[in-house]
Length: 237
Image (cartoon, rainbow, N blue to C red; front, side, top):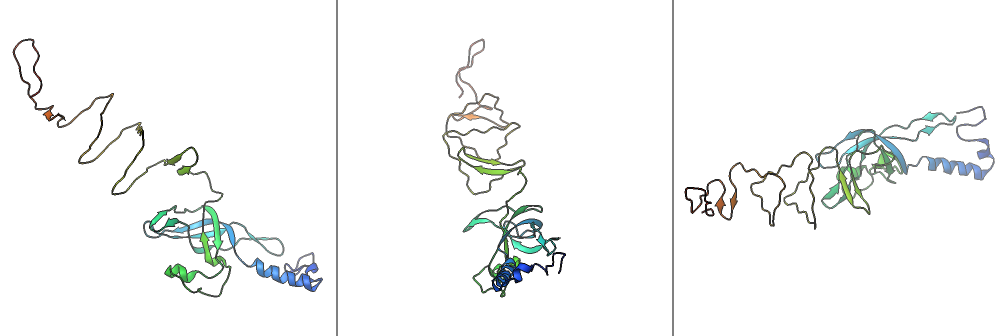
């Protein structure tokens, strides 16, 4: 492709002024075709089965330029696995959404066979440093979040505008002091509730069936020493 400055493609006259410059141009052209890392934007998400890995389709955010300096957007890169922080069977997973911006790293060999088998494999082809072999890391230059987990010197904050759910056969909370503040209400559903320690309430305690203290039923107990007149009864029987 020629332009008014007399270039042919990106090969300017100075590149042909010596063997070194010509060789330098060839090497630079080869390296320019190698993909290593780049900023991308998510354009589609394909989730895996629940709690397993999926893939994203991403659009490189830095356009290509032709020999005349005209912008040429890169094509969409499909089937890119996203990053999950995982060790053994434990993982912290954030599923990407369309519009996310993040980093994509491109492996130096064809990883298609490893993506298919998840085992040590030979490269799927002879291609090298190609955008087809990308892995999406995510989490760069995005908008402010609405839910988060923050860890710093002040402490740990887990914030959600909707719901936080814990699932486990056993949940233990241990601290010298625990404060629970529920501005609307609090509901506990359990067959039994055991509190080991003294209790104090500033409000009313209401029982739909009965209250038992020291083996005495509040609803059905009787009193001894009952006599007509203005005297008081004895303790519950």
